[in-house]
Image (cartoon, rainbow, N blue to C red; front, side, top):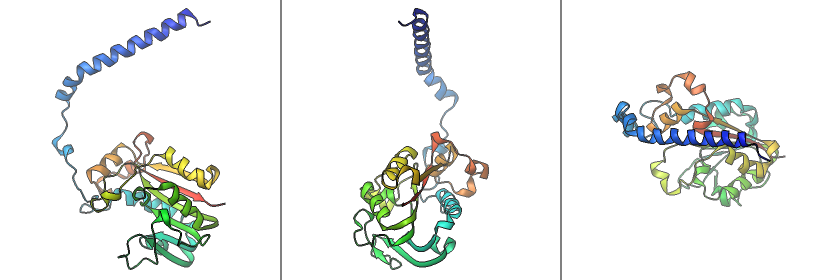
Length: 243
């Protein structure tokens, strides 16, 4: 039988919480008066990912993630849009393929939508570098299944996806998703197995606000770039291995 004293304590806490909430609501006009929103925050500093200021924030993290997993970039390697990381970080690369849906990309060796990529050979690649792409693919389950299919046994998928990010002006018509660490653990774990999937978030309030505002890496102190606050995750990295 519940204790009357315990019930009274719960009731008291509920009442105090309700009073606090009411006082906060009543005080909102005062807070806005004492701490007005700076005019500079009402418009982004850059609408071009901070390119005119320096290096886009997401690129700093992508470079670090792939550098830390460069041992996986070997053998037959598939990369999206170009071979930037295959060329700069790969070792003993025997085949470098580039996948793109855009047939105007003359660097691509395979043209396909990743969600319907039946024309890509199964179990062909030791590594698939899939950066900043899945937000533009509506059918995520199919895309991840194809990414798994094209890898050899023990092949590795290296992925980056945004959690906080402005839309790309040219790709808004296909910009479908933003991600969470929990969502990525389930999406990739369901296909590769949770034991074969590592999901890591990056960023914090300063980085997320900077990303939306159009700041560049050069605008943010390095100690802020290094700090991670899961409440304000900016982006997510996944390393998934086919077994």
